[in-house]
Image (cartoon, rainbow, N blue to C red; front, side, top):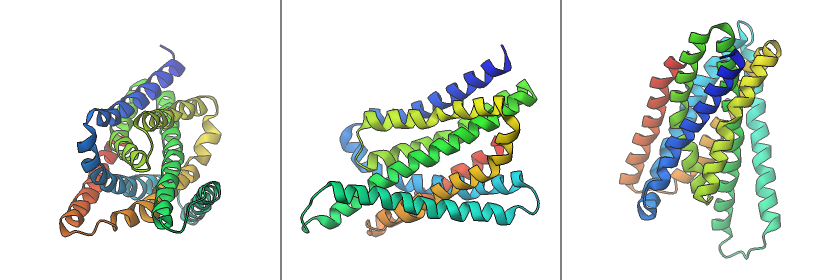
Length: 262
């Protein structure tokens, strides 16, 4: 099998498997899903923070090399500002396309923020998965065995992230089918990354650290600006303890899986 065929095979396989694990959530009865969903959002918060701060930012700094920390920092800050502007535009579109009375406007605003969060998660996850595809492609170009090991590690790394992303999409009010299809679309952007690596390896690798920083910025913004405020609306001691435990669990899963992605 040619190197290009291997890259395509493993990027497609990785995307399908990660979404399949997330899709298992569809099998949970609706009533139980409603009870479990807030906990999955807590878990998603942990995985987003873990992926950004334990994986993406360190990888960006390491890939950029000595002396590039300031530039990576600028890319990270620029990404956060950019996603703030993007969310503002999404919120503006919703607030001007719907006429609603002052009564219930506060609830509508939260719904709009959750919808905006879903858009940002898809954007950030698509960038992240495309970068994973670049990494897989680069590994296969170096050595077939290294490519297979890297692809398997990336699959393992993506599973908790996709489950968390699926929870965010459902929490935004999206239907299960649409959430699954969007998750599938964002996962399969790894194929694009693999093709970019194969055909334009040099330019792709030079831009990789800065693209990684932008993906990290998206995850940080969604977790801190969108998901955590939503968690604070559930204030009972029992729910608060569960949130802390699940956020910590999400971070821990990424911390345990990330070393194997190298």
